[in-house]
Length: 264
Image 1 (tube, rainbow, N blue to C red):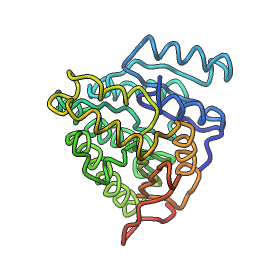
Image 2: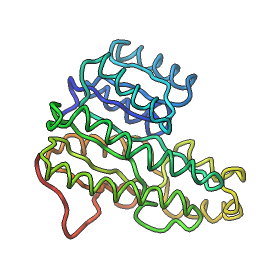
Image 3: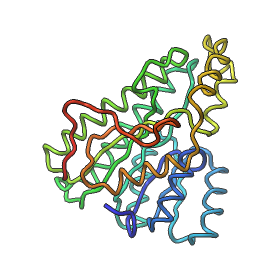
Image 4: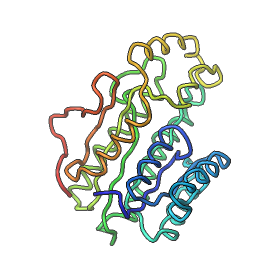
């Protein structure tokens, strides 16, 4: 699948990784529904993008992805506005070890719910035209992040869910490919959360350890995350793939013994 002429919905779209993903999709010719909790950041993002790509190709929808009705309504508005939905990027994410239930709600439950809502619109079993879904996880979903245990758990969950639902999509002939993208540390506002005791809770005392890990592993620019996203969208053979992005190896894939790499 190529993005030109397609319609994409991106959560957490106004800044950081989300903003980079939106820009590359627009560059490739897609129309975008930008979902974000922050109305000011969202409107500013849309206004900036509109000067370059035209207002007709973007739609900003303020949305709390943890609110089921708001999320369902956002998908409905997207389809009503653009006439279709081809690509979903579940990108919204937080790091909050103190309010750990919020972390699970945003990072995992909203990803599951968003995937299911998208399938209602995209799946050929429901009369849809097929499509592709990319769920943003993290390298912390592939290894234990000792100073962010709940964040790590939520991202492990994203990978497990994505691989399983991708297998179900293949078996059920949904016509939808579902993959996950797992970057290491990325230069986004999310990194600043480790400096806040009200977010890190008891793990705040380990902030220097996390900073040391950043220096050791390096910090990625959002542009390479956008490149990885387009690879997942454009490679029709990828389904259930777990893409990893690191400073040392760039874009590569987790090697599983039974990958679901097949055309749909």
